[in-house]
Length: 161
Picture 1: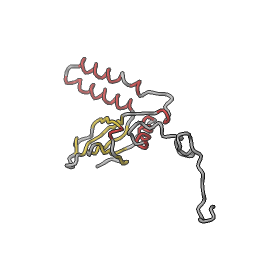
Picture 2: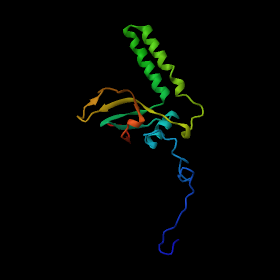
Picture 3: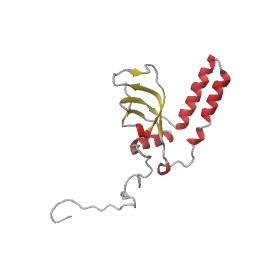
């Protein structure tokens, strides 16, 4: 207590980066350039299997959907290609689906920790875009969406109806 006030003075130990050691994460140096650390954390949680509905403001458009793992995005993208195979060109489409699946090791890690997690992209399923004219695209169940985390201007939890 100081003599001039009733407030308690608290000293917080700091790390070399100047962040308090009692912070939830010792340092925010893991945050990818230009990305919101909290949104990165939601992407990290999705990689752990905990999905979250989110609405993103990207360049004035609202993108709403459910955050999913990078591997789930690739799986669903490959499945989308394969479902189109009924329209012919089966070999070409199967080749595209197999090529997409080859990227899965980029998202697979047994020792994933927040301090070494530096995603550049966010992946959504059942996504739709609402433009400033209030039009919704698509009008049905949504689609897969992938965007740069650094391009997200703002976000809120939950989906737009």
